[in-house]
Length: 525
Image (cartoon, rainbow, N blue to C red):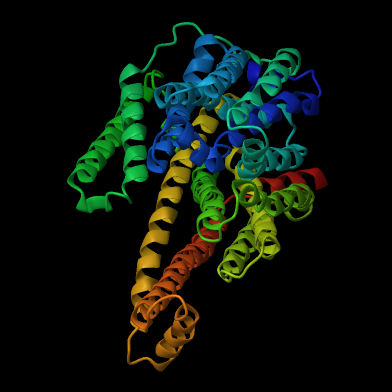
């Protein structure tokens, strides 16, 4: 029988009180992943840059946070986890002020990088704290609340950002972090405890080589994913070279971590991937995060570019998804206790797949209300799938391993989100081209339907221009409609492939060990 300091430690503060600053910090970090999306055109105008250049405002934040996330366990051991958590919130809040005050693109990029550095320490520590402070029987409900914040914040980001941008101005999408950051600091200092195993440790060495190759891998991979579609991927020599550099950096990073973990000097401990539940649960969450972040990016984009919605209305379209998340957070907490984790995860994945298929039925005649149901179902399935997977992936790990586990998991989830968004963007482009090639074959003089349509449209122009110009204008209008339909089909096909990706996760759920059932059996005995 083993009695370690870890097992003897008990948290004195009510876990739900501790949950308040933790969830507030999570919400701030996750919200800023997408709140800038709909404001990019306004920022591009302010800084006199192109839309493609403005995407670095989002990318720089994701890259910086992605580099910091795996190093969270190291910094927690170096200065103490609670101190590092507070420092992260301070950096994030100060950087938010810098973002709002930025008057040039270089200043904005520097500010967003600093904001990402602060934000990178928030999510892994918050997740580790939640797993520690709640007893196993209350963990499903706590994880439901956690999942609500993680999923709902990126969903609400475009609508909040759109409303603030249109009613005030884009700097206020960053200034709103100031009061919440100050409140979060106060509550964290007051209500977050620090167990012995998370305090400052002596003789902690920095893994400089591991950190260098991690930064190189994440940075080069993000550039490849962001610019690959515009450069026609591997048909561009510089993309091939950069991708090779990224792969080399990744291999060297993994090699260094495995080698140094034997002496306890590694940046992250990859041996945690040997845990059966953690590996499968993390893989599932990578796919779900890819679906979540890419869908949150392409849906407002589709409504703005294809259907002419304003930034506020396109952001508002995401609200039903938030309601679905809210309903799922309540349902998952109840159903996990009654049915177990695996059945709820399966139900969530099936619901999410149905949401993807419903999105696959949209057309150019839809109103804002017509995408409410698919969005609601999508949000419902996302939380019902993600919460159980997050719960089961770390349930079998000891408390002292939670910070490292959270860092590793969030690193791969960030990479999954970046890859998913890139795949979705490429899919829309390629599927649009395929459908345009298929439909353009019908625009010939030998097609009676096409000729009738040309004559009907040209008759409306004949009063103001000569007959040949009227025919030319009619053909141009039909071609514009064809292009609009082909782009719509690009989005439709992409949404349907979301359903396919989610269904592919289902067989792996069978191999998870459902700890909730074992706990029930122990109680009966």
